[in-house]
Length: 138
Image (cartoon, rainbow, N blue to C red; front, top):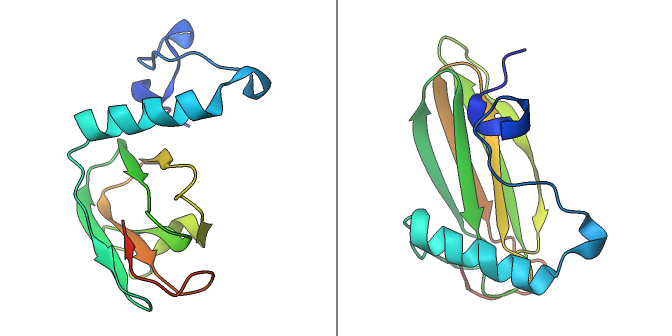
């Protein structure tokens, strides 16, 4: 299996620069602030308003061997989030991030997906109105 250089730590010949941190020694509040600063500086964030019961999606074309980074946070309670890929030449979509509830008002979500075939990836956020039936800003 091919591992993209961006996903492989430098000590193993890759390009990934950050080192492992023991979860028991992390100052999580400082860690979250560091993630937010990085995201606002480097990711070109935009604000999206989601009314109760509505959803928002972002779709993009991908090349084989692409690592797609994503980051989001909300201002209220929880949202459903999922990522789906439709590979070129295939009729069915494949979930690469299973649909689940994300409580990203307390901890921002920052992760990535490695894709080994060309196609389209769709990120989807759903304000299901579960714990807080309010409009949310994503």
